Image 1 (cartoon, helix red, strand yellow):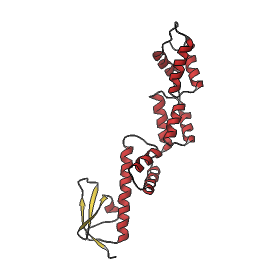
Image 2 (image 1 turned 180 degrees about the horizontal axis):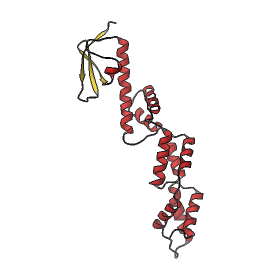
Image 3 (image 1 turned 30 degrees about the horizontal axis):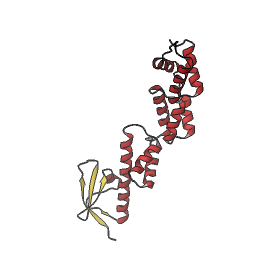
Image 4 (image 1 turned 180 degrees about the vertical axis):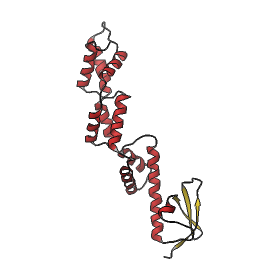
Length: 210
């Protein structure tokens, strides 16, 4: 098959992309970086192998851009990115290549994601380890990373005791067991295990929190 001649390279309205014309006809759209990556210039002859490489480069660029756009809202786990990209019907092999690139470049890091997630959920949402573990597992985080991230987190038991008192004031005229069940249920829904629940209730009952 004879080589094709680049007859024009035009910048699209989206200035990050170009239109490539071969032998006077539109051939394909490409990322602007392709000009440097493939040393493209008007009048240059390119063979079918280069054309196929350009198409693959463009396909990969679309996958990567979709991933970066998704990451622009907040940090994501590898599983979240994979699920998002596959939902866009991108080629699964390209998805894995892009994920590897993002991991190697530091854009994706499940360990950093887990540490940030644990910190945010404990500090801002007052969630316990049981619930956080469940949520991180749903996001595809490895068990050892979950445990390591939780080990670094500090539970503010006094702060939780204050939240409990505000939500369930201790009314001496009411049955203690009823109060206890309400408090325990509230804390368990937030993801606290039995030992943590007992510790928080002990703080309240020992008068450490008014």
